[in-house]
Image 1 (cartoon, rainbow, N blue to C red):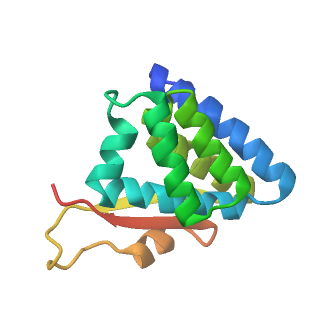
Image 2: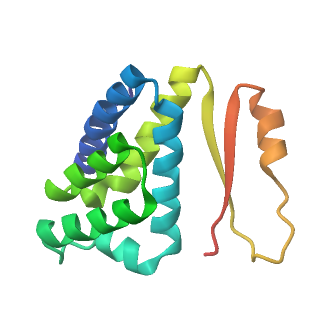
Length: 152
């Protein structure tokens, strides 16, 4: 594992490692990875959820109540749901995006593949020059590329 470059990444790596070890032991790495990706998408897509996760203005009780409600509605596995509640209760929700990235990297390493991500900085209607297929071709068959739209 790479050396942490910031306190947030150190926290994220420790929490992600704990979650990864539990998921690996119960054989649910793929499930947890998928569920975390869904929560990562929610952070990207919902300004309200992103504010809840990243803003220090919410108390741990408020974050825990909100996360508990989201968990009740989305019904992830018990492991993922409990993990989200623990990080909310421990005031670590701000590090969730980094935890998701760390877990994804651990899962890719566990599978023997490489996690790759490419970003398309063009407008939504414009043609992206590099797509998922190209990333797959360059990286090889064991890679699991993800292309996201990043309108900057």
